[in-house]
Image 1: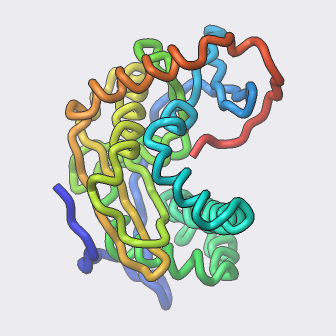
Image 2: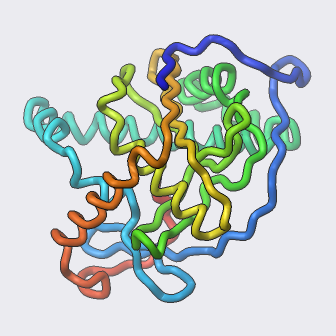
Length: 261
């Protein structure tokens, strides 16, 4: 199911602005270290296994369009546009995380600092008004997860109820509205997070939610079923491993804590 340009919102007033208070569910998840091997992100599990991030695994899938665009505009322009978009997306992600953690109501002075980033904040408010109001019962945010079944790992944006259904939720920023057929990697990624969370907690998640906001404030909601993308997940992981036979213990390694978005 796909809905675009969502208009309805449900908010709770707080002084001069409308904010919501979100309920959180406590769940224990093990901390994960990350390491970089030949520009590929890996997560180190408590058992010592090194699994590639799902973002790394998906990065080589369907690159034809991106490669063609980069060739058309040139590397300098492509790097500028990509860097600017990534920085904006990171700020919007942080705003979503802090808002869902009730910073706007519990720590209003800290929340006010977000407003200094004018464009990212304007973009965030569209998500806030139109789709974040559908979230509650939050189990995890920016949480490291991994799957022994698929041998992949990653950091999910949000595990929560969306319109009453427990979901793996990802926030995406885009320069323009996205067509459903462009998003298969997003759906595979979300399905991977759902599987990882299920393995770590025993709590099954069947629904994937991708929330997209564009530079002009258009909000898109894509809701999918995890089971429709598990075959593609298996195929993608298998293909990546066949193409990357070099052990993660070799190459240029640096340990860090940078989130995998």
